[in-house]
Image (cartoon, rainbow, N blue to C red; front, side):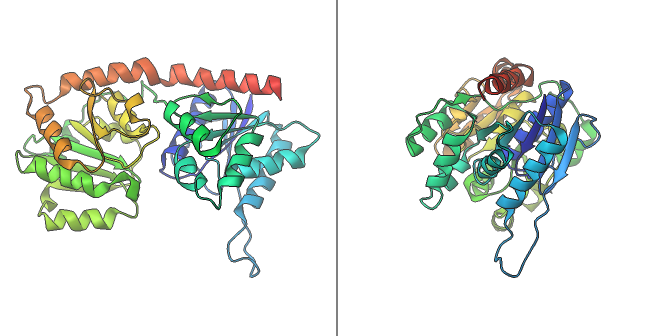
Length: 374
């Protein structure tokens, strides 16, 4: 198949999933055409089945903001015509599904079906905003196919938008061969020279991720035992976290790595992963950690309980309960195996439910179904 994929080309979960999906499809000999304003962060430009088409947005004094939605729709049509695409797959409802709807209308009477995948904040934050609710609902209902990344998000979409049309749950996934436990004694010795346990967090540092809670949890752990905290990512809450680290005099024990590629290499060195988010529709970073045999302490919100089984491959606490999170962290890191047994169970469960080898065929079958119906 020849598939056009549009996503935000950033470190957010929707962009990561869309890019990983494209690369997995390319590995199965589908031609994948990414259409966005910049190359997606994890895209492999050297894959012969992967192509990138940049959306160029002209700026005119008349416009306060560049009309990206219109430029994107025009580029989608252009790529459809020049590359004979079979379908478009857009990730995140606003504005991508609206642009796809425009492109499909412009392509008529030729057939250009499009699928919308809902990722979370496009429904829970943007879509529920009264200014965007009507257009979000309309674009979902007009899509040829709609998928969500968790049962939680499916139910939330039905509840928020009163959607009557069928939608399919296809969960986020992880490449279980790439994301696996690999040792790197040199890097581990650099981070934890005295063999201290390593706690880790990976996100885009937005307020919903509650980055300062990560620091608060670590401070409570550090008061009981030597430990190191590795923070991967960047975003608006980095300054607040850095201030809190200085306030608690933890500078020597907290490492800010910024944005990183090949995160599986870093995740493999963690003993424990922290994800104290206010809301997660799935929790992709937690899944990636689990695939690397790292137990996770996360919040009992959204789709997270579909990924983590409390007391089995990690622990779930309520948002903001840093005391409970720290208690579980100390318990895990105080064990003779430092949580390795729980980490191995985490990988087994991740492989059982979320391996790309099992999830990607679900997308392929869904594509064929939509193409047959369109």
